[in-house]
Image 1 (tube, rainbow, N blue to C red):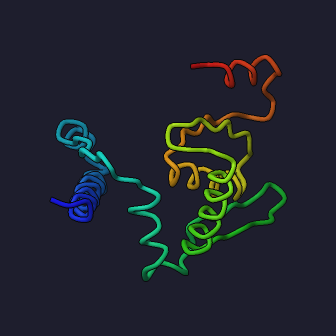
Image 2: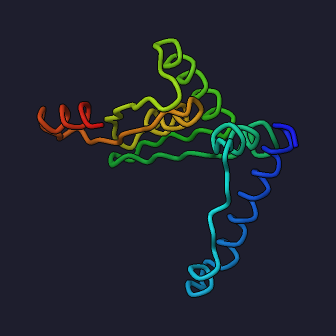
Length: 146
């Protein structure tokens, strides 16, 4: 099997697992007894699943809809979210962020949070989600933790 065949098989395994859970979403007993995570050695959800959706028939469909407390909202399509996250991934790559690196992400529920999370997935970086009210000691702990 070559890399393309491997990714295709992993995509199908992911799709089958997703479909199984959707089918059994109201049958907890079966879902918890039977479901097994598929082996996805080189599968990137952002690159192998999300981005192809963003290029296909769902490209103009809303992928993200953030509604703020004041009633303002932001909607991004699959294509927009894919493109914006790719730009952030390229920016982070330019800063030297690589697979396995950690990114301390301190953002509220706003488009930049979701764009950056997708960008990190595209790079294979690990997101450490944080919240703005952290103390300086808490931030230092997250930065220095192995």
